[in-house]
Image (cartoon, rainbow, N blue to C red; front, side, top):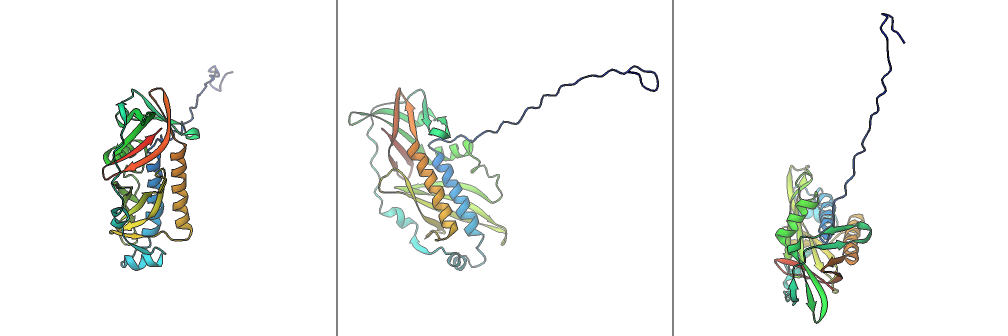
Length: 255
């Protein structure tokens, strides 16, 4: 084919390969319960704290959050759990947690030990507050301080439970409010209960409406994740048997 000026025209066929972006899932491990707890902070904190004006206690009462006393009282009666007596403990070269349809994830080797308890094969997975925060920074977006609605997430372990704090932005009054979600182990010591919301050291119960139900739904999913977890280490498979929490560490006992 020739153009109007007499130049010969040739067709050049170009093939473009379009690579679709890969959607990566945030890895979730036994710290998956922590991730879910962060969601609880967002659900409770952002929704409840936006109701705060210049009279926060009145606003809280109007929002349906009723004071239940001091947050510290929740943990005051909880005895410090005895340390796990793991016999012949070793640190396995590799430890993988299996969460069924949620996939698998390798755990830091220095947080895992295997051995026996009363002659039966057992394993422990232990995290300090710093360990939990490091995992949160590495494997979730909740602790990255990139969300303008909340920042400065902090884990405060207590005997038998803990409080997850965050500074929640309140644009209506141009400030932030420190909010904590109070968690406690239930009687089975294998899952958590949401006890309420901490604001300035006072514990407020969850409202009975949609907000409270959303929080409970998230806690239920976190507990289901824990119950489904199994640990593969040192040639064995271990299921969750017990959770022990003191002021410094949370330990998952697997048997």
